[in-house]
Image 1 (spheres, rainbow, N blue to C red):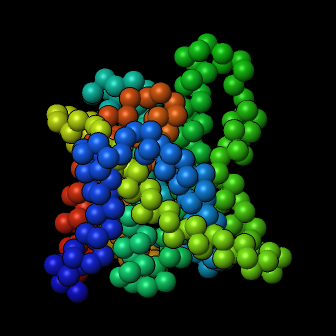
Image 2: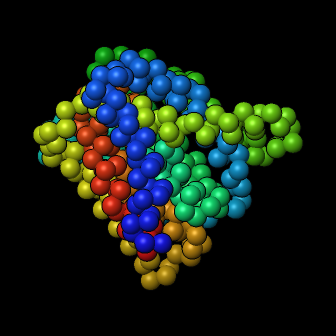
Length: 313
Protein backbone atom coordinates (compact mmCIF):
# COMPACT_ATOMS: atom_id res chain seq x y z
CA UNK A 1 0.00 0.00 0.00
CA UNK A 2 1.38 3.42 -0.98
CA UNK A 3 1.64 6.38 1.38
CA UNK A 4 -0.98 8.26 -0.64
CA UNK A 5 -3.50 5.44 -0.60
CA UNK A 6 -2.95 4.87 3.12
CA UNK A 7 -3.53 8.55 3.77
CA UNK A 8 -6.55 8.71 1.46
CA UNK A 9 -8.25 5.74 3.09
CA UNK A 10 -8.58 5.14 6.03
CA UNK A 11 -6.45 7.72 7.89
CA UNK A 12 -7.76 10.97 6.42
CA UNK A 13 -11.47 9.99 6.48
CA UNK A 14 -11.21 9.05 10.16
CA UNK A 15 -9.44 12.34 10.90
CA UNK A 16 -12.24 14.15 9.08
CA UNK A 17 -14.60 13.28 11.95
CA UNK A 18 -12.43 15.41 14.24
CA UNK A 19 -12.06 18.11 11.59
CA UNK A 20 -15.83 18.26 11.08
CA UNK A 21 -16.35 18.94 14.76
CA UNK A 22 -13.56 21.52 14.73
CA UNK A 23 -15.15 23.52 11.91
CA UNK A 24 -18.66 23.12 13.33
CA UNK A 25 -17.39 24.91 16.43
CA UNK A 26 -15.63 27.57 14.37
CA UNK A 27 -18.84 28.45 12.50
CA UNK A 28 -20.76 28.34 15.82
CA UNK A 29 -23.04 25.50 14.75
CA UNK A 30 -21.98 23.53 17.83
CA UNK A 31 -20.84 24.92 21.16
CA UNK A 32 -19.08 23.55 24.22
CA UNK A 33 -22.35 22.44 25.81
CA UNK A 34 -23.26 20.39 22.74
CA UNK A 35 -19.83 18.79 22.73
CA UNK A 36 -20.07 18.00 26.43
CA UNK A 37 -23.40 16.25 25.82
CA UNK A 38 -21.87 14.10 23.08
CA UNK A 39 -18.82 13.52 25.27
CA UNK A 40 -21.00 12.27 28.14
CA UNK A 41 -22.69 9.81 25.78
CA UNK A 42 -19.29 8.58 24.61
CA UNK A 43 -17.77 8.40 28.09
CA UNK A 44 -20.69 6.73 29.86
CA UNK A 45 -22.29 4.65 27.08
CA UNK A 46 -20.44 4.20 23.78
CA UNK A 47 -16.83 3.91 24.98
CA UNK A 48 -17.65 1.40 27.75
CA UNK A 49 -19.54 -0.67 25.17
CA UNK A 50 -16.50 -0.61 22.88
CA UNK A 51 -14.15 -1.46 25.74
CA UNK A 52 -16.42 -4.31 26.89
CA UNK A 53 -16.61 -5.65 23.35
CA UNK A 54 -12.83 -5.54 22.91
CA UNK A 55 -11.81 -6.93 26.30
CA UNK A 56 -14.25 -9.85 26.21
CA UNK A 57 -12.58 -11.05 23.02
CA UNK A 58 -9.09 -10.98 24.54
CA UNK A 59 -7.95 -14.44 25.57
CA UNK A 60 -5.74 -13.67 28.57
CA UNK A 61 -3.75 -16.85 28.05
CA UNK A 62 -3.13 -15.83 24.42
CA UNK A 63 -1.75 -12.35 25.17
CA UNK A 64 1.80 -11.87 23.97
CA UNK A 65 3.07 -10.56 27.28
CA UNK A 66 6.61 -9.66 26.10
CA UNK A 67 5.08 -7.21 23.60
CA UNK A 68 2.54 -5.80 26.05
CA UNK A 69 5.09 -5.48 28.86
CA UNK A 70 7.56 -3.61 26.66
CA UNK A 71 4.80 -1.30 25.48
CA UNK A 72 3.66 -0.58 29.04
CA UNK A 73 7.26 0.03 30.17
CA UNK A 74 7.96 2.49 27.35
CA UNK A 75 4.66 4.23 28.02
CA UNK A 76 5.58 4.78 31.67
CA UNK A 77 9.08 5.99 30.76
CA UNK A 78 7.62 8.65 28.45
CA UNK A 79 4.84 9.49 30.92
CA UNK A 80 7.16 10.01 33.90
CA UNK A 81 9.93 11.69 31.89
CA UNK A 82 7.65 14.30 30.32
CA UNK A 83 5.87 14.94 33.63
CA UNK A 84 9.19 15.59 35.41
CA UNK A 85 10.50 17.87 32.66
CA UNK A 86 7.23 19.80 32.55
CA UNK A 87 7.30 20.29 36.32
CA UNK A 88 11.00 21.14 36.74
CA UNK A 89 11.81 22.96 33.50
CA UNK A 90 8.50 24.58 32.53
CA UNK A 91 7.40 25.16 36.14
CA UNK A 92 3.86 23.89 35.67
CA UNK A 93 1.76 22.65 38.59
CA UNK A 94 2.09 19.06 39.73
CA UNK A 95 -1.38 18.15 38.49
CA UNK A 96 -0.93 19.73 35.07
CA UNK A 97 2.53 18.17 34.72
CA UNK A 98 1.14 14.72 35.45
CA UNK A 99 -1.61 15.07 32.85
CA UNK A 100 0.78 16.46 30.20
CA UNK A 101 2.99 13.44 30.91
CA UNK A 102 -0.01 11.16 30.51
CA UNK A 103 -0.88 12.87 27.22
CA UNK A 104 2.66 12.12 25.99
CA UNK A 105 2.45 8.42 26.85
CA UNK A 106 -1.25 7.59 26.59
CA UNK A 107 -2.17 7.15 22.95
CA UNK A 108 -5.53 7.74 21.28
CA UNK A 109 -5.84 4.01 20.53
CA UNK A 110 -9.59 3.44 20.82
CA UNK A 111 -10.72 6.48 18.86
CA UNK A 112 -8.02 6.77 16.20
CA UNK A 113 -5.54 3.89 15.89
CA UNK A 114 -8.03 1.02 16.28
CA UNK A 115 -10.35 1.93 13.37
CA UNK A 116 -7.31 2.55 11.14
CA UNK A 117 -5.70 -0.78 12.12
CA UNK A 118 -8.95 -2.68 11.63
CA UNK A 119 -9.35 -1.28 8.14
CA UNK A 120 -5.75 -1.99 7.12
CA UNK A 121 -5.06 -5.29 8.88
CA UNK A 122 -8.51 -6.80 9.47
CA UNK A 123 -10.08 -8.15 12.65
CA UNK A 124 -6.78 -9.68 13.81
CA UNK A 125 -5.57 -6.16 14.63
CA UNK A 126 -8.18 -5.81 17.36
CA UNK A 127 -6.73 -8.39 19.76
CA UNK A 128 -3.27 -6.81 20.30
CA UNK A 129 -4.79 -3.33 20.58
CA UNK A 130 -7.47 -4.61 22.96
CA UNK A 131 -4.74 -6.12 25.14
CA UNK A 132 -2.94 -2.77 25.23
CA UNK A 133 -6.20 -1.03 26.11
CA UNK A 134 -6.67 -3.62 28.86
CA UNK A 135 -3.32 -2.86 30.52
CA UNK A 136 -3.78 0.88 29.91
CA UNK A 137 -6.52 0.74 32.52
CA UNK A 138 -3.56 0.51 34.94
CA UNK A 139 -2.23 3.83 33.62
CA UNK A 140 -5.67 5.41 33.91
CA UNK A 141 -6.16 4.19 37.50
CA UNK A 142 -2.64 5.29 38.44
CA UNK A 143 -3.33 8.79 37.11
CA UNK A 144 -6.67 9.12 38.87
CA UNK A 145 -5.02 7.92 42.09
CA UNK A 146 -2.36 10.64 41.77
CA UNK A 147 -4.92 13.35 41.00
CA UNK A 148 -6.99 12.43 44.06
CA UNK A 149 -3.88 12.33 46.22
CA UNK A 150 -2.88 15.80 45.01
CA UNK A 151 -6.41 17.09 45.61
CA UNK A 152 -6.30 15.71 49.17
CA UNK A 153 -2.93 17.38 49.81
CA UNK A 154 -4.06 20.74 48.43
CA UNK A 155 -7.24 20.69 50.49
CA UNK A 156 -5.21 19.63 53.57
CA UNK A 157 -7.57 16.72 54.02
CA UNK A 158 -4.98 14.02 53.56
CA UNK A 159 -6.47 12.23 56.56
CA UNK A 160 -9.62 11.57 54.55
CA UNK A 161 -7.62 10.11 51.66
CA UNK A 162 -7.38 6.33 51.62
CA UNK A 163 -6.88 3.54 49.18
CA UNK A 164 -10.44 2.40 49.92
CA UNK A 165 -11.81 5.81 48.94
CA UNK A 166 -9.92 5.76 45.66
CA UNK A 167 -10.92 2.14 45.00
CA UNK A 168 -14.54 3.10 45.61
CA UNK A 169 -14.27 5.97 43.14
CA UNK A 170 -12.59 3.79 40.50
CA UNK A 171 -15.31 1.15 40.96
CA UNK A 172 -17.82 3.76 39.73
CA UNK A 173 -15.80 4.63 36.62
CA UNK A 174 -17.54 3.31 33.47
CA UNK A 175 -14.21 2.36 31.83
CA UNK A 176 -13.15 0.26 34.82
CA UNK A 177 -16.59 -1.33 35.07
CA UNK A 178 -16.58 -2.15 31.34
CA UNK A 179 -13.13 -3.73 31.63
CA UNK A 180 -14.14 -5.93 34.57
CA UNK A 181 -17.38 -6.98 32.87
CA UNK A 182 -15.48 -7.67 29.65
CA UNK A 183 -13.07 -9.99 31.46
CA UNK A 184 -15.98 -11.82 33.10
CA UNK A 185 -17.85 -12.10 29.80
CA UNK A 186 -14.74 -13.45 28.12
CA UNK A 187 -14.29 -16.06 30.85
CA UNK A 188 -17.96 -17.13 30.84
CA UNK A 189 -19.30 -16.28 27.37
CA UNK A 190 -22.27 -18.65 27.46
CA UNK A 191 -23.76 -17.08 30.59
CA UNK A 192 -24.92 -13.90 28.84
CA UNK A 193 -27.73 -13.71 26.27
CA UNK A 194 -26.67 -12.90 22.72
CA UNK A 195 -28.60 -9.63 22.88
CA UNK A 196 -25.96 -8.22 25.25
CA UNK A 197 -23.31 -8.66 22.57
CA UNK A 198 -25.58 -7.18 19.92
CA UNK A 199 -26.08 -4.16 22.18
CA UNK A 200 -22.35 -3.72 22.78
CA UNK A 201 -21.48 -4.12 19.08
CA UNK A 202 -24.17 -1.63 18.06
CA UNK A 203 -23.06 1.08 20.48
CA UNK A 204 -19.35 0.35 20.07
CA UNK A 205 -19.56 1.37 16.41
CA UNK A 206 -20.55 4.90 17.45
CA UNK A 207 -17.77 5.44 19.98
CA UNK A 208 -14.87 6.48 17.74
CA UNK A 209 -16.70 8.84 15.33
CA UNK A 210 -18.75 10.48 18.09
CA UNK A 211 -15.72 10.93 20.34
CA UNK A 212 -13.60 12.39 17.55
CA UNK A 213 -16.39 14.77 16.54
CA UNK A 214 -16.91 15.94 20.14
CA UNK A 215 -13.16 16.35 20.59
CA UNK A 216 -13.05 18.44 17.43
CA UNK A 217 -15.84 20.68 18.76
CA UNK A 218 -13.97 21.16 22.05
CA UNK A 219 -10.65 21.85 20.32
CA UNK A 220 -12.37 24.30 17.96
CA UNK A 221 -12.91 26.60 20.91
CA UNK A 222 -9.27 26.52 22.01
CA UNK A 223 -6.66 29.02 20.76
CA UNK A 224 -3.93 27.13 18.92
CA UNK A 225 -1.15 29.73 19.07
CA UNK A 226 1.18 30.01 20.81
CA UNK A 227 1.72 26.27 21.10
CA UNK A 228 4.38 26.49 23.82
CA UNK A 229 7.20 24.25 25.02
CA UNK A 230 5.15 21.83 27.15
CA UNK A 231 2.83 21.02 24.23
CA UNK A 232 5.72 20.46 21.81
CA UNK A 233 7.42 18.28 24.42
CA UNK A 234 4.32 16.08 24.67
CA UNK A 235 3.88 15.98 20.87
CA UNK A 236 7.50 15.09 20.14
CA UNK A 237 7.61 12.50 22.90
CA UNK A 238 4.41 10.84 21.68
CA UNK A 239 5.15 10.76 17.95
CA UNK A 240 8.93 10.25 18.00
CA UNK A 241 10.37 9.14 21.34
CA UNK A 242 7.68 6.63 22.30
CA UNK A 243 7.72 4.62 19.03
CA UNK A 244 11.52 4.91 18.80
CA UNK A 245 11.91 3.63 22.36
CA UNK A 246 9.56 0.71 21.73
CA UNK A 247 11.33 -0.10 18.47
CA UNK A 248 14.75 -0.04 20.16
CA UNK A 249 13.82 -2.13 23.20
CA UNK A 250 11.78 -4.67 21.24
CA UNK A 251 14.65 -5.22 18.82
CA UNK A 252 17.65 -5.27 21.16
CA UNK A 253 19.72 -8.26 20.18
CA UNK A 254 16.66 -10.41 19.62
CA UNK A 255 16.55 -10.97 23.38
CA UNK A 256 12.78 -10.53 23.43
CA UNK A 257 10.71 -13.01 21.47
CA UNK A 258 7.55 -11.32 20.26
CA UNK A 259 4.81 -12.38 17.92
CA UNK A 260 5.37 -10.36 14.73
CA UNK A 261 1.75 -9.23 14.36
CA UNK A 262 1.60 -8.15 18.00
CA UNK A 263 4.87 -6.28 17.68
CA UNK A 264 3.61 -4.49 14.57
CA UNK A 265 0.35 -3.44 16.21
CA UNK A 266 2.10 -2.30 19.40
CA UNK A 267 4.53 -0.20 17.37
CA UNK A 268 1.62 1.32 15.43
CA UNK A 269 -0.14 2.19 18.70
CA UNK A 270 3.07 3.69 20.13
CA UNK A 271 3.29 5.93 17.06
CA UNK A 272 -0.29 7.16 17.45
CA UNK A 273 -1.32 10.66 18.56
CA UNK A 274 -1.80 11.91 22.12
CA UNK A 275 -4.89 10.46 23.75
CA UNK A 276 -7.93 12.50 24.73
CA UNK A 277 -8.40 10.88 28.16
CA UNK A 278 -5.99 13.31 29.92
CA UNK A 279 -8.12 16.15 28.55
CA UNK A 280 -11.24 14.57 30.08
CA UNK A 281 -9.45 14.10 33.43
CA UNK A 282 -8.20 17.71 33.33
CA UNK A 283 -11.76 19.01 32.98
CA UNK A 284 -12.94 16.78 35.81
CA UNK A 285 -10.20 17.95 38.21
CA UNK A 286 -10.19 21.64 37.19
CA UNK A 287 -6.71 21.47 35.68
CA UNK A 288 -5.84 23.86 32.85
CA UNK A 289 -6.56 21.84 29.66
CA UNK A 290 -5.06 24.20 27.05
CA UNK A 291 -1.67 22.47 26.69
CA UNK A 292 -3.26 19.02 26.50
CA UNK A 293 -5.84 20.20 23.94
CA UNK A 294 -3.10 21.61 21.69
CA UNK A 295 -1.03 18.45 22.05
CA UNK A 296 -4.01 16.26 21.07
CA UNK A 297 -4.92 18.38 18.05
CA UNK A 298 -1.41 18.93 16.66
CA UNK A 299 -0.23 15.36 17.27
CA UNK A 300 -3.36 14.07 15.52
CA UNK A 301 -2.69 16.29 12.50
CA UNK A 302 0.99 15.29 12.35
CA UNK A 303 0.10 11.61 12.74
CA UNK A 304 -1.73 11.82 9.43
CA UNK A 305 1.71 11.83 7.82
CA UNK A 306 3.58 9.58 10.25
CA UNK A 307 0.95 6.83 10.33
CA UNK A 308 0.57 7.03 6.53
CA UNK A 309 4.31 6.38 6.17
CA UNK A 310 4.35 3.57 8.74
CA UNK A 311 1.27 1.76 7.43
CA UNK A 312 2.49 2.05 3.85
CA UNK A 313 5.82 0.44 4.70
